[in-house]
Amino acid sequence: MQTYTIPLVPGPVSVPEAVRAAYQIDYGSSDLEDEFFALYEECERGLQQILETSNSVTIHTGEGMLALWGALKSVLQPGNRVLAVATGLFGYGIGDMARSLGMQVETVGFGFDGIADPDEVRAAARRFRPHLISAVHCETPSGTLNPLGSLGAIAREVDALFYVDFVASAGGAPVAVDANQIDLGLLGSQKVLSLPADLAMVSVSERAWAHAQAVNYQGYDALLPWRDAMRKRYMPYTHNWAALAGLRVAVEGLLAEAMAQVYARHEVVAAHCRQRLRNLGIDLWPAREEFAAPTVTCAQLPTGWTWERFDGALRQHGMAVGGNYGPLAGKTFRIGHMGAQADLALVDRGMDVIEAVLE
Ligand SMILES: *Cc1c(COP(=O)(O)O)cnc(C)c1O
Image 1 (cartoon, rainbow, N blue to C red):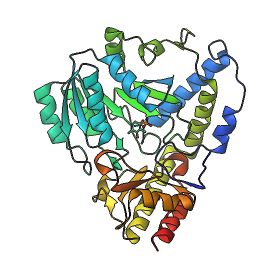
Image 2 (cartoon, helix red, strand yellow):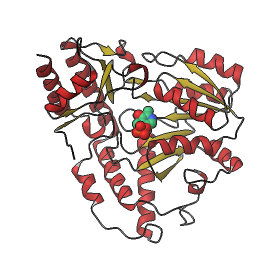
Image 3 (cartoon, rainbow, N blue to C red):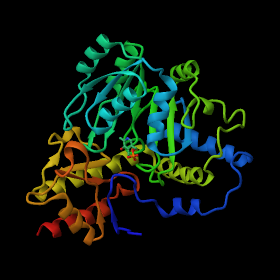
Image 4 (tube, protein in one colour):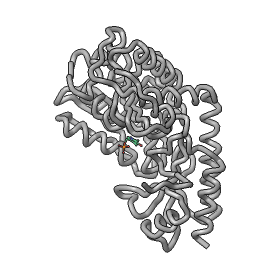
């Protein structure tokens, strides 16, 4: 197995020792033990604090994509209208996913170096009258951060559910689920939470539960069975106890540091990363830094370098970064400074490697 001394991939994020230790224990049968149910409820309460919500937070085995698919299938029926707000690969992709499920989809699209313009979204929403508006908070491939509050308000104006992929931001940037009126907030374990890729989490508002009840979708990725699972002490399947034990360590770590402190750490590390790249003559993506996410930095490949040669040179120094996909493939690279990797010393070591490689 290849390991890197300077792990800076924007997910999966390197897993801290304390979390790995929690995975090493031989737990009992999760569907039989009160201790497991207590653990699940503790994780849910911690996630509610991090996400700033009184909504339920369901915790599923799987990874981030399970949350994205399961939430769509749980609250929509074929023929329903979905307005997909898209500023990058995931935003456009969610529209494609909804279309593949038989929804009528309209995409309000923006450039991959931009963020959503609420006025355009409002105009489209008033005309199209969607059942659901989808958006992506941190568009990981583009390194951008979208506004949430203005889009949440628009969803309420047209009585649509507000579906937000915050897989790559929650825990590293405020998502304020209640204040931003997010009905379905989607999270995966392998990004900011710095866990293995084995859990998906969804914050579900009462409005979203009402839709889930009406749609009554049943399936491995369904939300509805989780509504009463804890109260009834009856789970839809055998849960991954070790993963929940790891989640508790991650959640407790964030809350002990205090979220304001965690967000400040991400901002400081991201600003430092961008500054050092600029000093090396590397152009950032997006060029407008006010659009940049605090969890991931995207930049253009240095002049004269292909992605393959650049990646190979960094790996020789023990450093792993992210490449890119879609229209940004082969033109950009990405530094993931989220969760355990939002570490000034780690990012500095990475920047030192890039500096050495460019010389
Ligand atoms: C990582 C990520 C996901 C989950 O995607 P995987 O590629 O399966 O890890 C979903 N949305 C966003 C914005 C992500 O960054």
